[in-house]
Length: 348
Image (cartoon, rainbow, N blue to C red; front, side, top):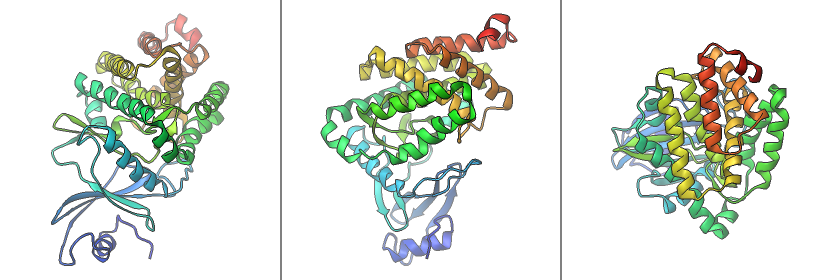
């Protein structure tokens, strides 16, 4: 029988039959919503509380987007690896995985906690969170490079990164936005050739819970040995997109972007070529989150148009550092606020 963990009766029967809970138990089951690539269910039982994830072959987005459900086992491997290099509590405890039904179970993050993305969309920004976010990523990149012999071999396969990131974000967007096609195709080639660290691949506020002021990192199914500048660009996009979207908090998010980059740069000892690559990835992701297979749901049509035009313009004259990109993005936003003054209209 094909197991669907979002069906409570099926799930409880499965857990009992496989000895994960007692045959007498009646666990609390709650289907978790919001994810596009997995089924996710909260299970509270006699011994504690778990979250179960089951990978979907067809992702829940408007555009056709397929990826092997075997990626959930890459996530399990990633959880085990990251728990060795990050502070205790930063990664949920791994419980079990099932290769037949492509699912894993992890310890649920205790209540009360908040999703960091939702906090940011409400304007609830704390500098300490941005610093922790930068520090955590720098630790993953730095420590994996120090143990490259082990991690390079274990995470050499990049098929999930190709199907979940490079094609749907960069390749698909290149086919939709011809003005940026050369820029994106060149970045794809550069990313494939530069493999120096463990890359999370989904490093985003959406995948972070805040519990007792500690950031807890989730969703590791795209983890691989590759180009760490992708992680920086992918995550930086969320600060800049929110700066565009939330005009009231614009300066807060721009300063948050600077603080995030400064923390990462110092702890990872990022050099100028790395900074330049991270800036290119930021521009590519800004465009992909408008025209790729997974657009940001909180941007309205006008905001998408603004982000698209800024990203295309800056891709044509890409700043050679992350700091320079943040400054240019802020300047473009300011000029948009002045109702398209002629000077910026020529460029964007």
